[in-house]
Length: 110
Image (cartoon, rainbow, N blue to C red):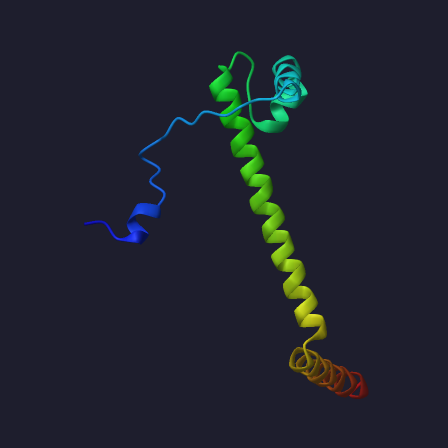
């Protein structure tokens, strides 16, 4: 019997073909990408790809962009927390004080 976790696990070795409805705008965008070497390079596609391969390249590119955006948002949230968290502010102030003390001791010896 499979557990809940096992049924939701992504298995890279079992590809699955999905169907997707494309709007007129989607089809126009695909046609533009198919005829534009610059757009093909931007999404990791190549000339002569099948429609399925082109859609896969677009999906892979979009998912990578989504991961990068989520990572960037995470770093921004962490930076905001580190900038405003009272304990983090106190630690940075303490470190600054130590560094300034070392610099002053080092410059007074000359």
